Image (cartoon, rainbow, N blue to C red; front, side):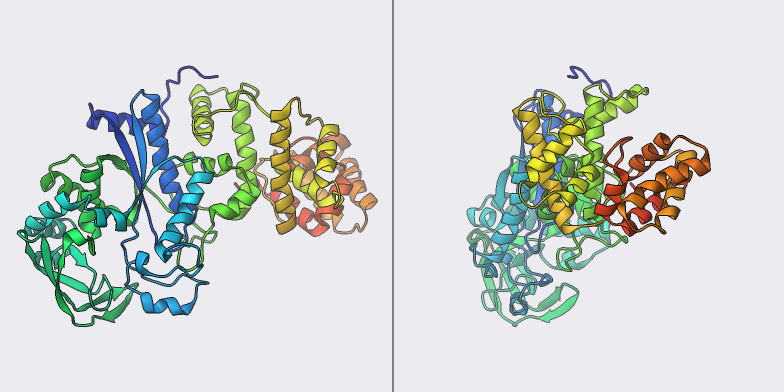
Length: 532
């Protein structure tokens, strides 16, 4: 549809910077880390999806690019996530690939957690080259970089001190051996490096893990780095990965700002490679402003979102804005489904946008929400709330067929198999939502007179108890306000389903519940409009 876009999308701007910094590279690689210590959520998955967008933008420039998903599965278990058995506490501090899988379906705890995130990437259409940190250390892929870092450990310690103020690595090697005696990794302290044997001498002294101190077992020993039973600390491992794997872009969360600055310097000053291009993103927060957490259960997962919305709607959430923390909950799915429909109308020229810059932003957002594989034509997209209403009133037998027939009556017809498949998928999402939820959000803004109309209807609904009474409310409000009933109904549909037409109002109230409809009409009548 669009052959040339002058306004650069944010991932395209980053791709321009990557191409300039690493001009002449054979392959441009973007990377994201996979935390294997707990359940993945949409915040952790968004790291990969956004970096993958830079990979796509590089390819659109005619450059060869690939995306790396690197699992930090040599890290130790810091906490037992909510809902998992307490018996896992005995493995605190043990590398997660040495912890048994509590679900008994993978070779280890770390393998299971990595698989959960990779499953999310697969379902979102993200292609990647996977690296297991434990396997990378076993295979010696970082050995050249480890040798340089440990041979220059005093310089590395000074870089860490200058950037973060931490003096620990002035006296201690930035390397964590796995204790041969107790199996923990965060309780060891490596003090001597022998380049001739490529080994470190260490003591299992103890350490803070997950905010709690754990005593070491006291074992003193030597670990040969080539055996892969140890790892670099984060304040040097990123640099080793970037240099060994040829990474040219990696985003990071603000909590890693110091670590990234340290690793950038180590990469350039110790390892002799230009550090990747970075951009810093804010975290997704739960409703109420709390950080999404793998260990506490305060999270929204891709599994949950994809029960109610399309992969493109979840990618839209991730590409819509990069900077600034956002609160997100499962109740946002309908909003993003409807927003994706609006973007489709802009892309195909069905909905006009007067401001050209704004139009191009919307076009680009739609393109990347579809990973640059844009559908060949628009498909029928009835409002999510209308689908939920039909799902609530549909008979238990022949549910999908019943809803499709009702949609046909409302003007949403399938012209071909592609249209029908799209409608069937939407019906499936709505059926799941209707089964599991009552509330739904609509982002339509109402004019002042429309807000007055829906408020008047909400007030009248309180005194009605049957379908006919619900329907009559709109006519009574129209008479009192001196407007045509049609205008009242249009305002009600805009507030409730984001459209100017819809099912019979009385039937809708009966299906959705009077109190719920009253609540949403009152919310829509507020000057700020409905929530986005």
